[in-house]
Amino acid sequence: MKLKVGLILLQLCPSFVFGEDWPTWRGAKGDGSWQATVSRVLPDQGLIMKWKANLEPGYSGVTVSKGKVYTMDRPSGDRERERVLCFDAETGERIWGFSFPVRYGSLEYGKGPRASLCLVDGFAYGLGAMGHAFCLEAKTGEVVWLRNLAEEENCKPPIWGFAATPLSLDDEILYHVGAQPLGAVVALRKRDGETTWKVGKDGMAGYASPLLLKADGQTQLVCWGPNKVMGLPVGGGRELWSVPYEVKYGVSIAQPLYREGIVLVCGYWNGSRAIRLKPGTGDADLLWSEEDRLRGLMSQPLYREGVCYLLDRTHGLTAFELKTGKILWRDRHQLTEAGRNPHCSLVWSDLKRGDALALNAEGELVFLNLNPRQYQEYWREQVVGKTWAHPAFSKKSTYVRDDRQLIRWELPDERD
Image (cartoon, rainbow, N blue to C red):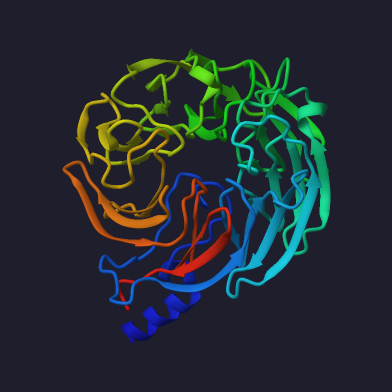
């Protein structure tokens, strides 16, 4: 009887069997976590490729929702357009495409759009590299609304273009676009794209999506711009707190992390800052700063049981204590190659056990364990060409892309 009940529960709860969808940047929870029973032993035949589809260049990550896969690119035959594409998650068949005109001009690293799509309640929200915000019907690609926020809200494009994936909040969709004179974050009404409120001041936008958190019973946004880290009230108003942090070339890229009452930001040239939110005051102050030994880039750090795991630009994957910044170990570039711009997308697959999946810049999918003691790798497999685009994980598969193709690989289940 117990076995029969267990089987019924598994049938009713498919997300319990393997991972949930990946409907937005950094997964369903927005924190780089995905619950799945990935096998620590790679089968003799390696990973199984289920399908691949043609793509054009772009940095946009992959998202998956309700049996469909989404990403953005820039067609090489028509460099004056950006494109949104939707594929069938099971077969790889292209379902629809939508494109809009855009002029990159002298944009650095201008091969294609950067931000991932955000899938919410049957709609796809996105942001192009030059500031075009849009909402599409997720099933058909039909346009609900399209706005040029760079022009309409007076947003100066960052050196490397707009890159922050939109953030869903109730009836609004939030864009980190650096509107002037007010509006580091601009809130648009989901149904028609109309601006409802703006909050935060900075010289221009950073590249990271705002972080939504709750402290002292109050919901707030953490926005990391090129000049400071800000705590902002939802709905508009004066900033709750800010900590100065002027970064070279405005490269505030990796999304902030919030754990144990601490906001962590990890920069490229100017290092990491740990900001403590002071209970009962609504204020914040600098807990610690490390400018030389903890320098990230594009990769969002992961956190588990007091320890953070960051891809340091000089030393490779690094484990350190969140509260103190004390370094526990470095992998000396085992996870991904050393270079000018090292990169690797890190995702928890089993937070309780410390297992994680990582797609490095060389296109290798690495399965490893992150713990305070040492770097521990189970297996790795070449799954795509060189890439900086964030992968998606859903059900028993990972979806990866480079500048030529989108590929679905089936992951090994430890119970098989």
